[in-house]
Length: 219
Image (cartoon, rainbow, N blue to C red; front, side, top):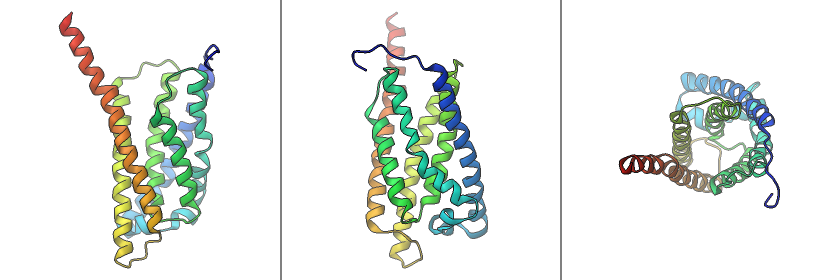
């Protein structure tokens, strides 16, 4: 695209973001309600270690749909490139590694997957709804964007906690199906996301706020 004019693609972007928002909302409702059911009836340990997310009558569809959705989500990057917007490292690194890890973990039905899927669906439900509104030309508060980044940071912390719980219960001999290599890769992935999202939050909101305040003082 370096030597080409940028494409506007506003209407396709609205449709794209709205489609992913609706998909994520349905996924969040279905996996979230199932997660709440397990938490209330069987407790935290079962919600982390139970493999029923992968083969339950309803959740298995949304687990499979979640894994498959990581491929079309790469379309976000395509829109950025075609519209000649800034493509940051966090964006493409996050999309590629989530796709690889999701496919890698799904085949082994590892413990913790239910939490990972539910959290991701929830965050994406809010995030893509925000993208759809922005693409449609609605004025959305900057605080909403800050809230989304904070939920992403929280998601990464929770991912590390879930990995720690899986490791602890595996060491104690409990039935928590995973393997050490998966826990290592997953923990490194979540830690790297945590650092990158914190850096993004600082640069996008804290630094810009300071710059605006300094500019007002000078004026």
